[in-house]
Length: 489
Image (cartoon, rainbow, N blue to C red; front, side, top):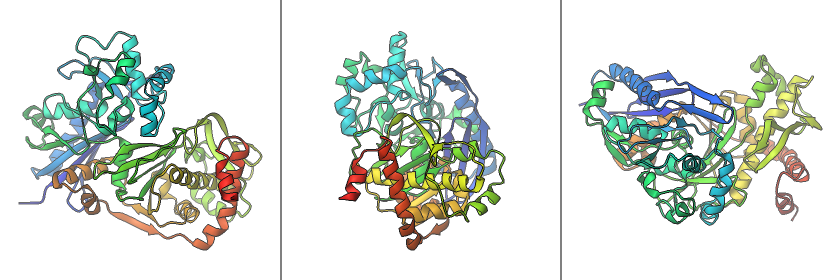
């Protein structure tokens, strides 16, 4: 009998992606379907029915490629903070309110005040687009009665697969206010917020088996009936699993439009500013701290929209006098510090198109590397383990020069995986849940493309400019002065 394959599903913002890998992490088949949403002002919605229908279509394509091969299990990840209401039978009764929907923004302060002590112990502050403020918005709209139940985005697909409503996973439930320390809904806080706990779902840890593919879902997708369906994690955590960053002190740095860091820590970090927050790991008594900056490679797209990036990179590599840069395209930063009104800068002026394009490109790339190093300093100060190594993923990890610059800036070894997509992370979780050893599953399924070593001589040469960058942020009032004082002391 052939070894089973493992399936991961990623419900993104713009598409559903499904992936099958074998026991060595080799891709057997992949399929995707486009997702569409509706945006109006602060609102962003999707049709929950489309999540299942498009996932089912993608899974049917995979099943046809498998030709009856055994499937070990599957898991689903989705966007963090995307929620909806269902009836008692699990059928959606509202649109899916997406992770970046800010209609309930003014209620974040209400949620923060009601649970400030718990949120402080968990190391975060309630944010305007998080799910708990959305629950309060539904409360004020009178929609929480009549047997209404809250569900998170992946619950819709999991419920359709197993044929009945399912528990939410604690990763997706974080932004709804789930207490990750006590592993329960904080009923005393919910009482202050006038939210009936009966509205909220049962919660289990990621990797818990939710049920098996039911006959109806098997007929719709072609998957073998009885295939275990495993509780997933948010897409960011799924990406961390796909990067294989599951040991204490290991980190995944995702550089796409924005910069996101996620790692593993033995202790729960505490950052009083709210820039850092932590998920529970799906393995051991560990935590997954991290943060997401508003900066990243989006600045490259904004400032150099039609550039030949290979040629621009080659020219930037020859630049020696690189000006300071905070490559923030819009307004406001959330990590490595929280500052809602700041704007980016390049040298002594605003972040804007520059006549010396190679010098500006070098400044943007170096600025991101500075922010990445500062992020690790902030994480360490919050109590996270940051010993490394670091895995680079995201679209910008295709630029070898930028990778080496970032590696040298950090001064630690860097791994670049072959397939960093979140769907692979869910295949890892599915395999690890069935075997009982998620890190071992990651070692089997995550394949590395290359490993970078830092040039420590260059690390030392880059450090004075980094310190100057940090001092400049302190002078602007963006960063806690103790960062500069600690170095001076």
